[in-house]
Structures are given as C-alpha cells and as structure tokens.
Image 1 (cartoon, rainbow, N blue to C red):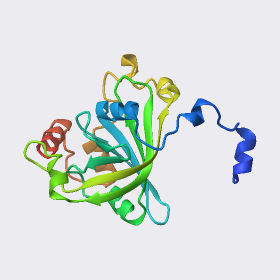
Image 2: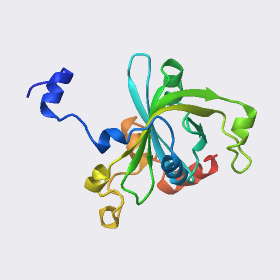
Image 3: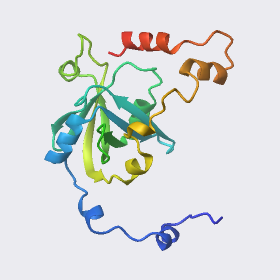
Image 4: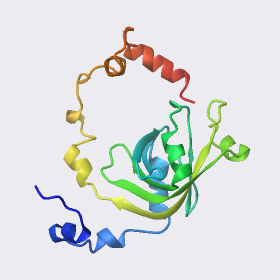
Length: 203
C-alpha cells in the first residue's frame, strides 16, 4: 500500500471536478438552502482546535431549530448537553466550521462552511426559548460557501429505508457500554431510565 501524500498524487487517481459539482457551490444561502434548513431537524457540526485536532458533533431538535438570519448568517442554539464544550472551545481557538444538514426521507444533504462566533445576547437567546427555557449561548455562523451534496452516500447506506432498520437494538444499551468502557461497578442505567432523565433536561 502506498501512502498518498501530495495533491498531485491524489489527482493522478481522481479526475478534477467539473460541471454541476463545481457550479452548484454558492457563497450565500439561496431560497432552496433556506427551505432545506427550515425542514431539517438534524445537523452535524465539524470543528478543529488551533492544533488542527478535529471534532464532529450532532445537533438536533424540531425542524427549523437553526434560524436563517440573512443570506450569510445562521444562528444555532446550544441546548443542554454534557458540558464537554468541545465544539465551542474549538471555535474560540479556530472559528472555521463545517455543517451538514439532513432531512428525514431525503437522500440529498446540504453542506455549509464558514466561520462561527459564540454569543449570549439576551434578545438572541430569547428568540430560541422553548418551554420557558433559553439556551445559554447561540452560535452565529457567517456563511462562506454552501452546496447541495448528491444522494449517493445515503442511497448506498440506505439510511431511510424501513427494511434497513434493526428490529431490535443490535448493540448493548448506552448504560451497559459506558459501564464497560469506564470499568464501572454500579448497575448500568436502563434505557427507560436514561430516556426519562434526558426528557427532563432536553431544554
């Protein structure tokens, strides 16, 4: 096996992109992007720190939880989580972010790249209030480029196909896996107890 270490080596194996794969890249959020974001209940945000160490983190709630402020700005609320703050700490060191939006049942994805800032303005946080609870902070993403990603990855994965779903959970519960990973001695938390605890702190 030969390690590919230069762009020239890579391009000797792959053709240059052309046609629609290049032309579809925009420098702003157009009406189709906006509608995609409004219908998306799930996204992944990729960041890296000043050393280039990468991280990817899921975000999700009701469709439209990410607000389109204008053609170049998105607002993403930070809901209660595990307080690791990997994403936000990375942004403080390196504001570059990559986003992928998904819509259940749609095989295409929307990719957005840009730079992010973290804000705690009262009015901004209030605009994301749910059940009387506001996020501690809101991330503003300044959009540099957007493009629709073709359906091939989701078609190959059959992500939305009913017959691709497992009838029963194919892996241990979260509680069981974490117990094994940390070599814990306490009984693992059941799926029901974990879901009940999560529901109390979703917002």
